[in-house]
Length: 274
Image (cartoon, rainbow, N blue to C red; front, side, top):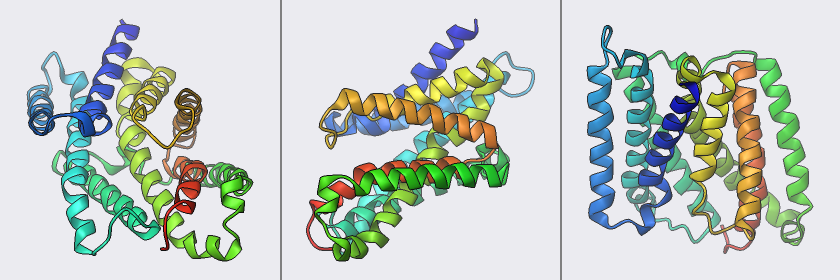
């Protein structure tokens, strides 16, 4: 029973991210709109129906999470690009890439928090809380520091020189922090605490890790996609474990931001001037 529910939750989670994020570039325009409207209607209706006393009531928190994820991702998808154009920027420069990520992440986070407020969901249920803050910050800073060292050892990064690296630092920081906060809230903060009562802690971590990893199958910046997905899955397990261990997303955010340095700094090095 638990494994069956695990499979169902993982499939639903991946389906949401596949239709609203991963495969959007190859979907027809009509399918993109239809998928978003359909998912919002289905999960919104299920959340409304599954009130106390209904046979689906124990799944109500999960329906909320699915609805909030789709709404947040849709806000980011439709509004981030117009916002970037408002600033006169494109994604052909480091500042444009960083601002695009900041706008997208802000819209997704605001969307999730707004839905939580409207649905009377406690913000702490999203792991936005103090928790074991010292442990989280300690692990997050150590792992982020290790990732930074590995990043600086990459030939493409070493070729930049210290002056160029310092000029890029604010935009790198904006990108990795924005992305880490958004993804930790979207993939784990929303789901871990809602999956755990249904399938247990470790299956909850595994389910969210699988959804997160599969959602990255469309990446084009990895020279070896299978190796990238394997590392992504390992990181996902670690981030989920750390979030559960500390009862907060802040340690995972720091760790995640450090891991993103391994990817974004070499990409920034190939772009034009900031």
